[in-house]
Image 1: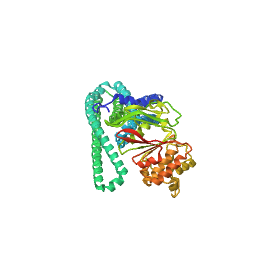
Image 2: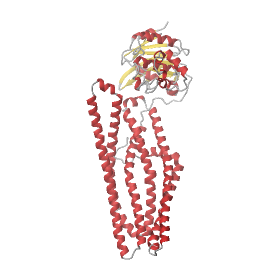
Image 3: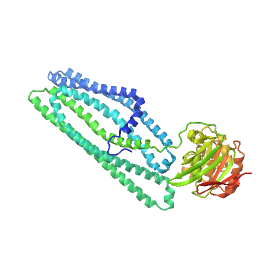
Image 4: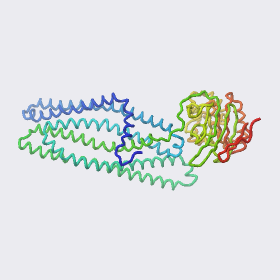
Length: 560
């Protein structure tokens, strides 16, 4: 992440502006519209001068009416152009923010498993959701307010110089003071925004914890403790929101006071000029109206700077996430028609400087049934994660059908591997939605067949809504054994060449495991099956049995 002392991070802004490149034509069109809009004020100023120098002194009511109608007409033109520009800018911004969010989504899938396991996922979620929305607000502010205001201000400055350059000098005299004050207040705003955003992330993380761990809180009778903890977080957010809002108000009030002072000086000096007959009332009023237009644009710009600061902080945060270099270990693109052969060749793995696997050799053949047993912490789950390509070994190599993992399209390979982890993930939704996840082409008959093999159809049919039953977050409405059978059915839907069952006896009794293995033996696809468990009873269901102990894998029983 960029140093917070740097107001703008050039690299972050280049990253962000890259999402606007495809909108170049619309941006040019919007710029031309804004430039044209800035010129609409010119005939208005002329009509004001004509009204007070000609129409009113000559008592020509008809000319007064026509001048008023003309001013109103140009105002309507200005409103129409503003609406058109708004529509164009909305399209530009929405398209760019969509592209940004899409890029961040792809990056999340490109990051390594280590990044995801070590990061606070609640904070990342809050940042992507909240910060991209702040960038949308900032983009709207820049395109719809700051940029048009700058163009209009430039036009008005030229007009004011033409009308009366001496009064312009009065206005310019206050600009250094405005600049210094604005720079100081914006630094305070920036600091407040940073603290507020971190407080908001803590609040978001806290509410997620409350919802996610409601049962844990109740089991541990920690309700009062948790309420106190979250209340403290919300109190901090309340305080930081108040401080940020107040500095926003101070910033706006200071800017309005300075522009108001400039307006008063123009009234005094301009009034003196009219008394001395150096200006007509029409000339003065046209200048004053132009100056008020200019101050309005300046106020719009300065008031918008808070959105710019907030968006800039969000951009810096998101760019720090997008620039994460901890990506997935394999970047190959070679697809293969996977037959089912997985080879670990002298594979060693170290986690947090602790050796987990030491020169492991293993070959899984098509149709084989292998068990790896070992105590908890022996490295069994690491072996699975290496086979799935979540991690790369420190030494040695992995192969699929003889092709090194470095060359393979791992996403394509995983489509041919079914995995059931010891705590299978289930999401809030129906049984059918959970089963079909990742296999959208599976029809209902195929889903039912997979559930029969996994022994899940037995309890699903007894439910009032059958396959349309809601399972709750993390499958909370079902037992561990039912959830595991659903996960097995989901894996079988892929018609895998390799089926990995991690701790299959954790939630299933021995009789159910025996029935399940018998049905898996009769699958038409005859996938290779890898059983990984600390329970030695699984050896009864395998032909080749390996033991993983202190990072070393040895064969203890082989099929004859």
